Length: 445
Image (tube, rainbow, N blue to C red; front, side, top):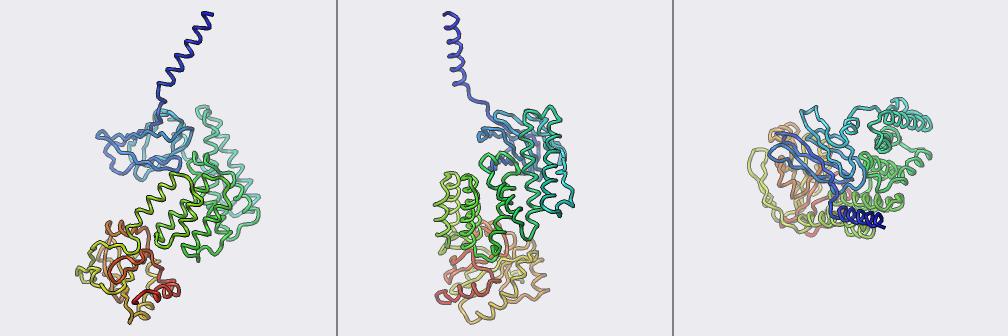
Protein backbone atom coordinates (compact mmCIF):
# COMPACT_ATOMS: atom_id res chain seq x y z
CA UNK A 1 0.00 0.00 0.00
CA UNK A 2 2.85 2.39 0.84
CA UNK A 3 4.38 1.75 -2.57
CA UNK A 4 1.02 2.45 -4.24
CA UNK A 5 0.62 5.72 -2.28
CA UNK A 6 4.13 6.75 -3.30
CA UNK A 7 3.39 6.00 -6.96
CA UNK A 8 0.15 7.98 -6.86
CA UNK A 9 1.95 10.90 -5.22
CA UNK A 10 4.64 10.91 -7.91
CA UNK A 11 2.01 10.82 -10.67
CA UNK A 12 0.11 13.74 -9.14
CA UNK A 13 3.29 15.79 -8.68
CA UNK A 14 4.29 15.09 -12.30
CA UNK A 15 0.82 16.09 -13.50
CA UNK A 16 0.96 19.35 -11.53
CA UNK A 17 4.42 20.12 -12.88
CA UNK A 18 3.31 19.35 -16.45
CA UNK A 19 0.28 21.61 -16.18
CA UNK A 20 2.24 24.51 -14.71
CA UNK A 21 5.24 24.28 -17.05
CA UNK A 22 4.65 26.10 -20.36
CA UNK A 23 5.49 24.16 -23.49
CA UNK A 24 8.72 25.15 -25.15
CA UNK A 25 8.08 27.61 -27.95
CA UNK A 26 9.32 27.14 -31.50
CA UNK A 27 11.89 29.82 -32.17
CA UNK A 28 13.81 31.02 -35.21
CA UNK A 29 16.79 33.28 -34.57
CA UNK A 30 18.57 35.18 -37.34
CA UNK A 31 22.03 36.59 -36.67
CA UNK A 32 22.60 39.12 -39.46
CA UNK A 33 24.80 41.86 -37.99
CA UNK A 34 24.54 45.16 -39.87
CA UNK A 35 22.53 43.64 -42.74
CA UNK A 36 19.75 46.14 -43.57
CA UNK A 37 17.25 44.34 -45.84
CA UNK A 38 13.94 43.05 -44.51
CA UNK A 39 13.71 39.63 -42.90
CA UNK A 40 10.82 37.18 -43.21
CA UNK A 41 9.76 33.67 -42.30
CA UNK A 42 7.19 31.96 -44.53
CA UNK A 43 5.50 29.01 -42.86
CA UNK A 44 2.12 27.26 -43.09
CA UNK A 45 0.95 29.63 -45.83
CA UNK A 46 1.69 32.67 -43.64
CA UNK A 47 4.42 35.30 -43.79
CA UNK A 48 5.98 36.83 -40.67
CA UNK A 49 8.27 39.87 -40.39
CA UNK A 50 11.39 39.67 -38.22
CA UNK A 51 13.02 42.76 -36.76
CA UNK A 52 16.62 42.76 -35.59
CA UNK A 53 17.75 44.36 -32.35
CA UNK A 54 20.78 46.63 -31.78
CA UNK A 55 23.10 43.61 -31.79
CA UNK A 56 21.97 42.48 -35.25
CA UNK A 57 19.84 39.56 -34.02
CA UNK A 58 16.21 38.96 -35.02
CA UNK A 59 14.07 36.41 -33.17
CA UNK A 60 10.53 35.18 -33.66
CA UNK A 61 8.38 32.71 -31.70
CA UNK A 62 6.27 30.65 -34.10
CA UNK A 63 3.29 29.60 -32.01
CA UNK A 64 1.52 28.46 -35.20
CA UNK A 65 3.73 25.35 -35.36
CA UNK A 66 2.01 22.40 -33.70
CA UNK A 67 3.57 19.62 -35.80
CA UNK A 68 6.68 19.12 -37.98
CA UNK A 69 6.76 21.37 -41.02
CA UNK A 70 9.01 23.29 -43.42
CA UNK A 71 9.54 27.02 -43.68
CA UNK A 72 11.47 29.49 -45.79
CA UNK A 73 13.62 32.17 -44.19
CA UNK A 74 14.21 35.24 -46.38
CA UNK A 75 17.36 37.24 -45.66
CA UNK A 76 17.17 39.99 -48.27
CA UNK A 77 17.40 38.29 -51.66
CA UNK A 78 18.48 34.97 -50.14
CA UNK A 79 15.84 32.36 -49.33
CA UNK A 80 16.77 29.35 -47.20
CA UNK A 81 14.55 26.37 -46.49
CA UNK A 82 14.41 25.01 -42.95
CA UNK A 83 12.75 22.09 -41.18
CA UNK A 84 11.04 22.72 -37.83
CA UNK A 85 9.46 20.61 -35.13
CA UNK A 86 7.43 22.02 -32.22
CA UNK A 87 9.78 23.37 -29.55
CA UNK A 88 12.81 23.68 -31.85
CA UNK A 89 15.22 26.60 -31.57
CA UNK A 90 16.88 27.16 -34.93
CA UNK A 91 19.72 29.66 -35.34
CA UNK A 92 20.77 30.97 -38.74
CA UNK A 93 23.90 33.11 -39.05
CA UNK A 94 24.57 35.23 -42.12
CA UNK A 95 28.32 35.45 -42.74
CA UNK A 96 28.07 36.98 -46.21
CA UNK A 97 25.75 37.12 -49.22
CA UNK A 98 26.83 33.56 -50.07
CA UNK A 99 27.52 32.08 -46.62
CA UNK A 100 24.78 31.15 -44.16
CA UNK A 101 25.28 28.72 -41.29
CA UNK A 102 22.66 26.64 -39.49
CA UNK A 103 22.97 25.94 -35.78
CA UNK A 104 20.78 24.73 -32.96
CA UNK A 105 18.02 22.17 -33.49
CA UNK A 106 17.83 20.50 -36.92
CA UNK A 107 21.19 21.97 -37.99
CA UNK A 108 22.15 18.81 -39.93
CA UNK A 109 18.73 18.58 -41.57
CA UNK A 110 18.73 22.24 -42.60
CA UNK A 111 22.25 22.01 -44.00
CA UNK A 112 21.13 19.01 -46.07
CA UNK A 113 18.00 20.82 -47.27
CA UNK A 114 20.10 23.61 -48.68
CA UNK A 115 22.53 21.40 -50.56
CA UNK A 116 21.88 21.28 -54.28
CA UNK A 117 20.26 17.94 -55.15
CA UNK A 118 19.08 17.60 -58.78
CA UNK A 119 15.55 16.39 -59.49
CA UNK A 120 17.11 13.61 -61.61
CA UNK A 121 14.61 13.63 -64.49
CA UNK A 122 16.53 13.89 -67.79
CA UNK A 123 15.48 16.97 -69.76
CA UNK A 124 14.48 14.96 -72.85
CA UNK A 125 11.82 13.14 -70.82
CA UNK A 126 9.84 16.39 -70.49
CA UNK A 127 9.01 15.86 -74.17
CA UNK A 128 8.24 12.16 -73.83
CA UNK A 129 4.93 10.23 -73.71
CA UNK A 130 3.10 10.43 -70.39
CA UNK A 131 3.83 6.85 -69.34
CA UNK A 132 7.58 7.35 -69.83
CA UNK A 133 7.55 10.64 -67.99
CA UNK A 134 5.66 9.24 -64.98
CA UNK A 135 8.06 6.30 -64.86
CA UNK A 136 10.98 8.76 -64.67
CA UNK A 137 9.06 10.79 -62.08
CA UNK A 138 8.66 7.74 -59.83
CA UNK A 139 12.29 6.72 -60.38
CA UNK A 140 13.45 10.18 -59.26
CA UNK A 141 11.33 9.86 -56.11
CA UNK A 142 12.90 6.50 -55.30
CA UNK A 143 16.39 7.90 -55.89
CA UNK A 144 15.86 10.77 -53.46
CA UNK A 145 14.34 8.46 -50.83
CA UNK A 146 17.46 6.27 -51.01
CA UNK A 147 19.66 9.34 -50.57
CA UNK A 148 17.76 10.47 -47.47
CA UNK A 149 17.67 6.97 -45.97
CA UNK A 150 21.43 6.61 -46.44
CA UNK A 151 22.04 9.40 -43.89
CA UNK A 152 21.48 8.30 -40.27
CA UNK A 153 21.23 11.91 -39.04
CA UNK A 154 18.06 12.34 -41.15
CA UNK A 155 16.31 9.22 -39.89
CA UNK A 156 13.85 11.06 -37.60
CA UNK A 157 12.46 13.16 -40.48
CA UNK A 158 13.19 10.99 -43.53
CA UNK A 159 9.53 10.65 -44.47
CA UNK A 160 8.94 14.40 -44.14
CA UNK A 161 11.97 15.19 -46.30
CA UNK A 162 10.83 12.74 -48.96
CA UNK A 163 7.30 14.20 -49.04
CA UNK A 164 8.62 17.75 -49.18
CA UNK A 165 10.84 16.84 -52.13
CA UNK A 166 7.89 15.14 -53.81
CA UNK A 167 5.97 18.43 -53.84
CA UNK A 168 8.95 20.16 -55.43
CA UNK A 169 9.05 17.42 -58.05
CA UNK A 170 5.32 17.89 -58.73
CA UNK A 171 5.79 21.64 -59.04
CA UNK A 172 8.48 21.25 -61.69
CA UNK A 173 6.54 18.50 -63.48
CA UNK A 174 3.45 20.72 -63.74
CA UNK A 175 5.52 23.65 -65.04
CA UNK A 176 7.71 21.78 -67.51
CA UNK A 177 5.48 18.89 -68.56
CA UNK A 178 1.74 19.28 -67.96
CA UNK A 179 1.37 23.08 -68.36
CA UNK A 180 3.55 23.11 -71.48
CA UNK A 181 1.01 20.98 -73.36
CA UNK A 182 -1.53 22.84 -75.42
CA UNK A 183 -4.10 20.17 -74.66
CA UNK A 184 -3.82 17.70 -71.80
CA UNK A 185 -4.53 14.08 -72.61
CA UNK A 186 -7.36 12.38 -70.76
CA UNK A 187 -4.76 10.49 -68.72
CA UNK A 188 -2.78 13.64 -67.93
CA UNK A 189 -5.94 15.45 -66.87
CA UNK A 190 -6.82 12.49 -64.64
CA UNK A 191 -3.36 12.45 -63.01
CA UNK A 192 -3.56 16.14 -62.11
CA UNK A 193 -7.13 15.74 -60.83
CA UNK A 194 -6.00 12.87 -58.60
CA UNK A 195 -3.10 14.96 -57.26
CA UNK A 196 -5.52 17.80 -56.46
CA UNK A 197 -8.02 15.48 -54.76
CA UNK A 198 -5.28 14.21 -52.43
CA UNK A 199 -4.45 17.65 -51.02
CA UNK A 200 -5.65 18.93 -47.65
CA UNK A 201 -4.63 21.30 -44.88
CA UNK A 202 -1.70 19.05 -43.97
CA UNK A 203 -0.17 19.76 -47.39
CA UNK A 204 0.75 23.26 -46.23
CA UNK A 205 3.36 21.78 -43.88
CA UNK A 206 5.52 21.25 -46.96
CA UNK A 207 7.21 24.30 -48.45
CA UNK A 208 6.58 23.72 -52.21
CA UNK A 209 3.03 22.44 -51.68
CA UNK A 210 1.01 25.68 -52.03
CA UNK A 211 2.74 26.57 -55.30
CA UNK A 212 2.40 23.02 -56.65
CA UNK A 213 -1.31 23.00 -55.80
CA UNK A 214 -1.77 26.46 -57.31
CA UNK A 215 -0.09 25.41 -60.57
CA UNK A 216 -2.15 22.21 -60.67
CA UNK A 217 -5.37 24.23 -60.28
CA UNK A 218 -4.26 26.69 -62.98
CA UNK A 219 -3.33 23.92 -65.44
CA UNK A 220 -6.67 22.14 -64.95
CA UNK A 221 -8.77 25.31 -64.99
CA UNK A 222 -7.20 26.56 -68.21
CA UNK A 223 -7.93 23.21 -69.84
CA UNK A 224 -11.52 23.16 -68.59
CA UNK A 225 -12.10 26.84 -69.41
CA UNK A 226 -10.02 27.49 -72.56
CA UNK A 227 -11.57 30.92 -73.21
CA UNK A 228 -10.55 32.21 -69.76
CA UNK A 229 -8.32 34.99 -71.18
CA UNK A 230 -11.31 36.67 -72.80
CA UNK A 231 -13.45 36.68 -69.66
CA UNK A 232 -14.11 39.94 -67.84
CA UNK A 233 -12.94 40.07 -64.24
CA UNK A 234 -16.53 39.77 -63.00
CA UNK A 235 -17.58 36.85 -65.20
CA UNK A 236 -14.20 35.13 -65.02
CA UNK A 237 -13.95 35.28 -61.22
CA UNK A 238 -17.47 33.92 -60.84
CA UNK A 239 -16.65 31.01 -63.16
CA UNK A 240 -13.37 30.38 -61.29
CA UNK A 241 -15.13 30.23 -57.90
CA UNK A 242 -17.69 27.72 -59.18
CA UNK A 243 -14.90 25.62 -60.72
CA UNK A 244 -13.00 25.59 -57.43
CA UNK A 245 -16.15 24.56 -55.57
CA UNK A 246 -16.70 21.63 -57.93
CA UNK A 247 -13.13 20.38 -58.28
CA UNK A 248 -11.54 20.62 -54.82
CA UNK A 249 -12.62 18.21 -52.12
CA UNK A 250 -10.85 19.62 -49.09
CA UNK A 251 -12.63 22.62 -47.51
CA UNK A 252 -9.41 24.28 -46.28
CA UNK A 253 -7.76 24.16 -49.72
CA UNK A 254 -10.98 25.23 -51.44
CA UNK A 255 -11.54 28.24 -49.20
CA UNK A 256 -7.93 29.42 -49.49
CA UNK A 257 -8.04 29.37 -53.29
CA UNK A 258 -11.47 30.99 -53.46
CA UNK A 259 -10.06 33.68 -51.18
CA UNK A 260 -7.05 34.09 -53.49
CA UNK A 261 -9.34 34.46 -56.53
CA UNK A 262 -11.47 37.14 -54.85
CA UNK A 263 -8.40 38.87 -53.43
CA UNK A 264 -7.02 39.16 -56.98
CA UNK A 265 -10.42 40.37 -58.20
CA UNK A 266 -10.43 43.23 -55.68
CA UNK A 267 -6.83 44.17 -56.55
CA UNK A 268 -7.51 44.34 -60.29
CA UNK A 269 -11.22 45.21 -60.52
CA UNK A 270 -11.94 47.12 -57.31
CA UNK A 271 -15.09 46.82 -55.21
CA UNK A 272 -17.67 48.93 -57.03
CA UNK A 273 -18.90 46.17 -59.32
CA UNK A 274 -18.26 43.10 -57.16
CA UNK A 275 -21.49 42.52 -55.23
CA UNK A 276 -22.23 39.18 -56.91
CA UNK A 277 -18.62 38.03 -56.45
CA UNK A 278 -18.63 39.02 -52.78
CA UNK A 279 -21.91 37.21 -52.21
CA UNK A 280 -20.44 34.07 -53.75
CA UNK A 281 -17.44 34.46 -51.46
CA UNK A 282 -19.42 34.83 -48.25
CA UNK A 283 -21.66 31.89 -49.19
CA UNK A 284 -18.59 29.65 -49.57
CA UNK A 285 -15.95 30.86 -47.09
CA UNK A 286 -16.46 30.49 -43.34
CA UNK A 287 -12.79 30.47 -42.29
CA UNK A 288 -12.64 33.42 -39.88
CA UNK A 289 -9.00 34.25 -40.66
CA UNK A 290 -9.82 34.53 -44.36
CA UNK A 291 -13.01 36.49 -43.68
CA UNK A 292 -11.06 38.98 -41.56
CA UNK A 293 -8.54 39.47 -44.39
CA UNK A 294 -11.38 39.88 -46.89
CA UNK A 295 -13.19 42.51 -44.80
CA UNK A 296 -9.94 44.37 -44.14
CA UNK A 297 -9.22 44.55 -47.87
CA UNK A 298 -12.74 45.80 -48.59
CA UNK A 299 -12.21 48.59 -46.05
CA UNK A 300 -8.91 49.58 -47.68
CA UNK A 301 -10.41 49.69 -51.18
CA UNK A 302 -13.42 51.74 -50.08
CA UNK A 303 -11.07 54.73 -50.02
CA UNK A 304 -11.01 54.68 -53.82
CA UNK A 305 -14.55 53.58 -54.53
CA UNK A 306 -16.92 55.56 -56.74
CA UNK A 307 -17.34 59.15 -55.52
CA UNK A 308 -14.14 59.23 -53.47
CA UNK A 309 -12.07 62.41 -53.41
CA UNK A 310 -8.68 62.30 -55.13
CA UNK A 311 -5.71 63.86 -53.28
CA UNK A 312 -4.04 66.82 -55.00
CA UNK A 313 -1.17 65.10 -56.80
CA UNK A 314 1.32 67.16 -58.79
CA UNK A 315 2.48 66.18 -62.27
CA UNK A 316 4.84 67.55 -64.91
CA UNK A 317 4.21 68.00 -68.59
CA UNK A 318 6.91 67.39 -71.22
CA UNK A 319 8.12 70.99 -70.75
CA UNK A 320 8.65 70.49 -67.03
CA UNK A 321 5.67 72.63 -66.02
CA UNK A 322 3.67 71.60 -62.94
CA UNK A 323 0.18 70.37 -63.79
CA UNK A 324 -2.86 69.47 -61.65
CA UNK A 325 -5.91 67.31 -62.31
CA UNK A 326 -8.29 70.15 -61.42
CA UNK A 327 -7.37 71.73 -64.76
CA UNK A 328 -9.94 69.34 -66.24
CA UNK A 329 -12.77 70.12 -63.81
CA UNK A 330 -16.09 69.83 -65.63
CA UNK A 331 -14.92 66.98 -67.85
CA UNK A 332 -14.53 63.25 -67.44
CA UNK A 333 -10.84 62.25 -67.36
CA UNK A 334 -9.78 58.85 -68.69
CA UNK A 335 -6.31 58.26 -67.23
CA UNK A 336 -3.85 55.88 -68.87
CA UNK A 337 -0.88 54.84 -66.69
CA UNK A 338 2.03 53.84 -68.89
CA UNK A 339 5.81 53.45 -68.99
CA UNK A 340 8.33 53.22 -71.80
CA UNK A 341 9.43 49.76 -70.63
CA UNK A 342 5.86 48.38 -70.56
CA UNK A 343 5.14 46.71 -73.93
CA UNK A 344 1.49 46.10 -73.00
CA UNK A 345 1.16 49.84 -72.26
CA UNK A 346 2.64 50.88 -75.59
CA UNK A 347 0.29 48.43 -77.32
CA UNK A 348 -2.64 50.52 -76.02
CA UNK A 349 -1.59 53.66 -77.92
CA UNK A 350 -3.30 52.91 -81.28
CA UNK A 351 -6.59 52.20 -79.49
CA UNK A 352 -6.23 55.38 -77.44
CA UNK A 353 -5.64 57.47 -80.57
CA UNK A 354 -8.78 56.05 -82.16
CA UNK A 355 -10.77 56.85 -78.99
CA UNK A 356 -9.41 60.42 -78.86
CA UNK A 357 -10.57 61.02 -82.43
CA UNK A 358 -13.98 59.46 -81.89
CA UNK A 359 -14.64 61.41 -78.65
CA UNK A 360 -12.95 64.70 -79.59
CA UNK A 361 -16.28 66.55 -79.38
CA UNK A 362 -17.41 64.85 -76.16
CA UNK A 363 -17.01 65.96 -72.56
CA UNK A 364 -14.01 63.73 -71.87
CA UNK A 365 -10.22 64.13 -71.76
CA UNK A 366 -7.73 61.34 -72.38
CA UNK A 367 -4.68 61.82 -70.15
CA UNK A 368 -1.50 59.75 -70.29
CA UNK A 369 0.46 59.54 -67.01
CA UNK A 370 4.00 58.23 -67.38
CA UNK A 371 5.52 56.26 -64.48
CA UNK A 372 9.14 55.88 -65.64
CA UNK A 373 11.94 56.20 -63.13
CA UNK A 374 13.45 59.23 -64.87
CA UNK A 375 11.75 62.28 -66.37
CA UNK A 376 14.18 62.14 -69.32
CA UNK A 377 12.92 58.67 -70.30
CA UNK A 378 9.42 60.13 -70.58
CA UNK A 379 10.36 63.26 -72.53
CA UNK A 380 12.68 61.33 -74.84
CA UNK A 381 9.99 58.80 -75.73
CA UNK A 382 7.26 61.41 -76.26
CA UNK A 383 9.55 63.47 -78.51
CA UNK A 384 10.91 60.50 -80.47
CA UNK A 385 7.50 58.92 -81.14
CA UNK A 386 5.58 62.21 -81.28
CA UNK A 387 2.94 61.02 -78.79
CA UNK A 388 0.00 63.44 -79.17
CA UNK A 389 -2.49 64.74 -76.66
CA UNK A 390 -2.16 65.28 -72.91
CA UNK A 391 0.92 63.45 -71.62
CA UNK A 392 2.15 64.11 -68.06
CA UNK A 393 4.80 62.60 -65.84
CA UNK A 394 4.15 61.14 -62.35
CA UNK A 395 7.23 58.89 -62.07
CA UNK A 396 7.67 56.56 -59.10
CA UNK A 397 5.20 58.25 -56.77
CA UNK A 398 4.54 56.09 -53.71
CA UNK A 399 1.60 58.19 -52.53
CA UNK A 400 -0.14 57.93 -55.92
CA UNK A 401 0.53 54.17 -56.15
CA UNK A 402 -0.72 53.61 -52.61
CA UNK A 403 -3.92 55.63 -53.09
CA UNK A 404 -4.85 53.98 -56.39
CA UNK A 405 -3.35 50.57 -55.43
CA UNK A 406 -1.24 50.40 -58.58
CA UNK A 407 0.11 46.84 -58.74
CA UNK A 408 0.62 46.56 -62.50
CA UNK A 409 0.34 48.39 -65.80
CA UNK A 410 -1.37 49.22 -68.05
CA UNK A 411 -3.96 50.64 -65.66
CA UNK A 412 -6.87 52.90 -66.50
CA UNK A 413 -8.80 55.22 -64.18
CA UNK A 414 -11.89 57.37 -64.86
CA UNK A 415 -12.58 60.60 -62.97
CA UNK A 416 -15.96 62.30 -63.07
CA UNK A 417 -16.51 66.00 -63.98
CA UNK A 418 -16.12 66.96 -60.29
CA UNK A 419 -12.66 65.37 -60.23
CA UNK A 420 -13.80 62.47 -58.05
CA UNK A 421 -13.30 58.80 -58.80
CA UNK A 422 -15.91 57.37 -61.14
CA UNK A 423 -14.15 54.05 -61.75
CA UNK A 424 -10.64 53.31 -60.42
CA UNK A 425 -10.40 50.13 -62.50
CA UNK A 426 -11.63 51.14 -65.92
CA UNK A 427 -11.85 48.94 -68.99
CA UNK A 428 -8.68 48.87 -71.08
CA UNK A 429 -8.40 50.80 -74.33
CA UNK A 430 -7.78 47.57 -76.26
CA UNK A 431 -11.37 46.51 -75.46
CA UNK A 432 -12.82 49.31 -77.62
CA UNK A 433 -16.37 48.05 -78.10
CA UNK A 434 -16.95 47.32 -74.41
CA UNK A 435 -15.23 50.57 -73.45
CA UNK A 436 -17.29 52.69 -75.86
CA UNK A 437 -20.48 51.07 -74.64
CA UNK A 438 -19.47 52.05 -71.09
CA UNK A 439 -18.50 55.63 -72.02
CA UNK A 440 -21.67 56.25 -74.04
CA UNK A 441 -23.78 55.59 -70.95
CA UNK A 442 -22.04 58.27 -68.87
CA UNK A 443 -24.26 61.18 -67.86
CA UNK A 444 -23.20 64.37 -69.63
CA UNK A 445 -20.59 62.72 -71.83
